[in-house]
Amino acid sequence: MTSNEQLDRLATFEPVPYPVVSLYLNTQPDGRGKDHFHTFVRKEFKARSETFAPNSPDRERLERDLERITAFLENELTPSANGVAIFACSAADLFETVQLSAPVERHWLYIGDQPHLYPLARLESQYPRYAVVLADTNGSRIFVFARGEKVRSRDVPGTKTRRTTQGGWSQARFQRHVENFHLHHVKDVVDALDEIVRRDAIEHIVLAGDDVVLPLLKDQLPKHLTEKVVDEMHLPATADESEVIAATLGALRKTTARTDSEKVDAAVGAYRAGGLGVVGPAETVLALTNGQVDELFVTATLGELQGLPDGHPAADLAIANDASLVEPAVDPIAAGEPADASPDVVRLADELVTKARQTGARVTFIEDPELLKPYGGVAATLRYRA
Image 1 (cartoon, rainbow, N blue to C red):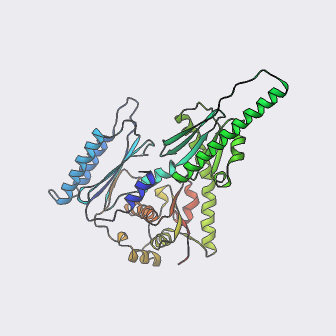
Image 2 (image 1 turned 30 degrees about the vertical axis):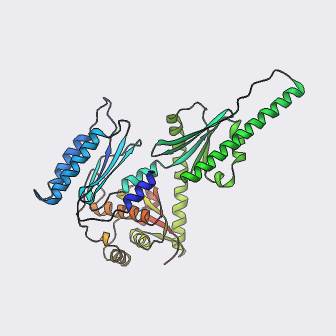
Image 3 (image 1 turned 120 degrees about the vertical axis):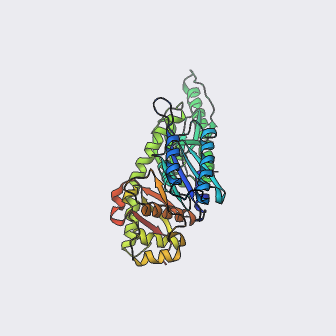
């Protein structure tokens, strides 16, 4: 199952009158190779459990969830994982884990009435799915990366050629022969890339190679693939996966930083013109509830997200249309989140992300907090006006 499919499935989980555990852990070992997340889990689960009455059904459910989570961490957590997200609710038959090569920023335990998806969606934004073509005239590799790790790769073999010591016509004929081999190989690479992009719904491509193969590759790319190329760089054909990830992820993030401002400007401009754009938490929640949102822009800094204002007409209408925004069946209890993010803000962040996933809207986290600060940390482009 792809990361997008996991998010979509978790987003369909409706609020329930039982405690739903969302646990995010940074599982990177310290300098001595020791893990420290077990202490957080034991301490915080004990503290959260004690907020429920002794021997109550909810407390017993939490204890069962803790037992299953502990067993998973001890027996099934992959040693190479740098982060893990666990969603559990024994009463609703929910137990789903997401092991990550990308590190989780901080431990985070959230107990509410549905899965807490903001941090997972945030990781998806930080470590997006993209393709890299590591091209060489003698043989190329195509990688697909997501969540900071390789999810698949494909080798495209070339035809090795030998140098000739003959001169004159023989040398020229041999050179044309070599160039034909190179061109044929590049066309094979483009065909393989096109198939991978379609199958994996790739939006970003990075081209890597040398001065000989890159011009050939760019010349053969059809328009629909050229439009997805975000950068090109020089990397040796022998580069290993870690080198490729480190170099290309940095390039991808630079491109994202440039386009964030353009996207926010477009949404704000559409809103000002009375067109297909909205700004602000209340208006955006309402548009999401109506299924109008095409792309949601939400601040990557929770402290910059404003809650729904009391008495706001749009907020009142959104709440009337959305039972999940009324008093939750289980009061949210969080530990480990930023101190400047109130429970109401955390819940709003979840509502934004969950509703976007439910309605097929794209979610873009804006890294620069200043871009969305004047609009309460939220804006969106619309498919249509109500």
